[in-house]
Amino acid sequence: MNMHPHRQAPWFSLAFAVFAADQAAKSTIDAITPLGWSHPVTSFFNLVHVLNPGAAFSFLAGAGGWQRWFFLAIAVVASVWLIWMLRQPRPRSESLAFSLILGGALGNAFDRALRGHVIDYLDFHFAGWHWPAFNVADIAITVGAACLVLASFAGARQPQTREKA
Image (cartoon, one colour):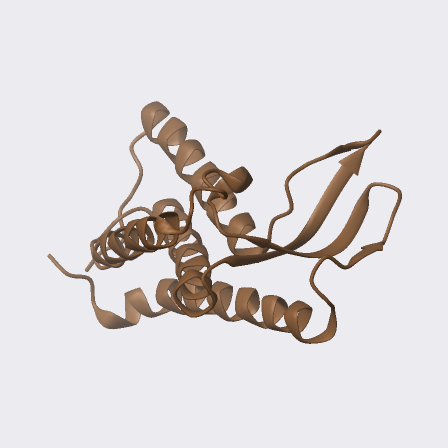
């Protein structure tokens, strides 16, 4: 059963907004800073310009190139599934989560397809320890996943109302 298009529009609009914000930030960093650039913003945060050919935490970054197509394929398959999920009636919390994950997945997939790597620019650190650099797409995917976890706990406690078609 498909939802009415007017009920789907906000979720697809949110996914597009995440994608657009992610690409705008990456393009700006790429256009105005040299690769390897780092600028301290606070005592615990730098803006940087680094490339990540791998996945989260640079997983498989040095794998020789095949990982580009592997992670791109995963992102495309996941995006198709997320689009299908967003077309189904479901609780708003799940739709929010799927929208954020979709926007982030498309943002990083676009980078892999166009550039061969993902541009990361947010670098948090403390006492010499650096969290791996990340970007808006990564934030959206992480927040979306957290929303799904929270929604699953909320759903276990009480039945949620689903959006009506």
